[in-house]
Image (cartoon, rainbow, N blue to C red):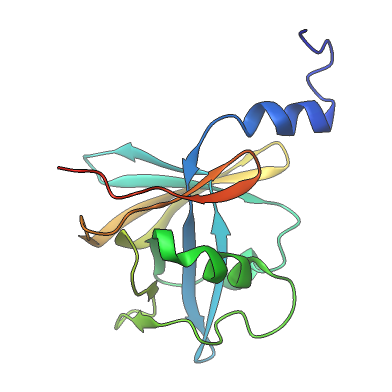
Length: 165
C-alpha cells in the first residue's frame, strides 16, 4: 500500500532504508585532536574533476567543527568497523578511543582497515532541505581491494563478505 503522505517520517525512513549503502567516516584534526562524523549518504559525482558528495544534517553539532578544515579524510568503512562506526557517531565519550588512524600532513584523519581512503577538500555546499549537500574534491586516494565494506541497510549495519575478483 502506497503511503499518501511522503512527509510521514517513519514511512520515509523505512523506504529510504531499503536502499543499501556503504558507510564512511569523515574526519579531520581540530586543535590537535581527531573530530569526525559518519554518513551513509556518500556518492561518487564526477571523474573530471574528481568529486564526491556527502549529505550533512543541519542539526549536526560536529559538522561545524569539520566544515572549515583544509582537508577531510573520508574512510570507506570496512566490515570490521561496526564498533568504530557507532563510537564515532555517538554523542558522548571519546569518539576515537582505541581507533587506529593516520593523519595526513594537511590534517585529514583516515581510519586504518578501511576499504578506501579519500583525502578531500570542500568544493561547495548547497542547502538541500534539512541537510547540506557537500561536494568534495578528491585530492588523493588509496583503495584496499582486500577489505570488505561495511553496509547500512534497514537502519542496521551489516558486514558484506569479501567478493571474489
